[in-house]
Image (tube, rainbow, N blue to C red; front, side, top):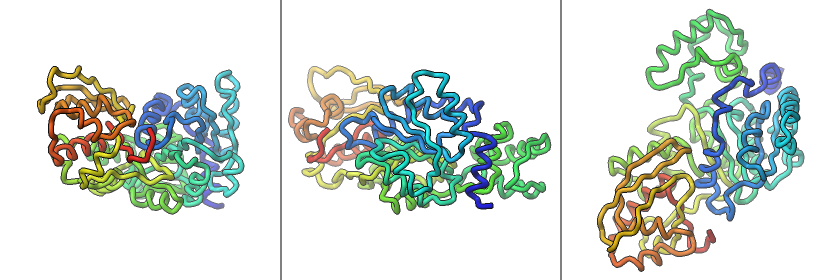
Length: 404
């Protein structure tokens, strides 16, 4: 039997996300959408996606949650498990507001997928699916064919430090066949034994997970837990460019708190993501790809950089203080918080930097804003602060030819 058929049987027996997966049901897709809009679709006129594809929808939970947060969007949800699609359609009939979601039974590797689901998607969401599909390149090519020119792919996949990479090596020593999951008290005890070891370096406990999780994320015929560079390579071959990594922003903040971020200039967002991943490999990647490559600001050329436009993102809520009586190079306290990233920062900024945030609307250049401020800002300081705001996702910088 082919690996793909074995995987299909796993999900036919236990449709994802397993009905009782409370963590997935609690996930706020609003927060994911804020991140996608801030980092992945910076060139789009309207960052709220009008057309969304849920790739690997399982029993429809993700599609239903998205409908609650995108009431006007066209949502298409696809899964290769016919039983999962049947469950999704049955649940769909119970809620009137969900009945316009289009559920499709199809294989993500099928070259005919774009014809079955249509194209022109602003956003494709594929969470916890691609790690279990053998023909990754085919799926990524299909994603590229389905996306609009300014669309984004949110891809959540296993990393090289995923807990299964250790368990799949350790459990055979206790006589377990990793391709055949059979729950039992003894298995749970063995998993507790493993938990006492692997949780030392921050990995999650698995002994209390649902059978459905264990049957796919630990056991099973296929589990691709790849490095970031390997996932990026698959994307690049499909014409997709890495735009961001969920965990990298938190790591960058730690660097910035120690005032070490200037050492990373002039690296792009994607280059910083790659550097941080090499230092701290992820167990689970939450990645953003787009067809358009990142427009990297000219960090080393003052004249060119000042022509770019600054736009605060919606990823953060910023409590901007009222303008002072005089614009001075003094520090003022403000609070920057992000629900999506679960971050809250007490920051001190000079008045000129606050003025850039106040006036940044994408309609004027940074040079135009700074000319209104009777203060000469040294270029190294300007670049340092802009680089910090940009890589934390607090602002986007648009090239002169880009409209907001």
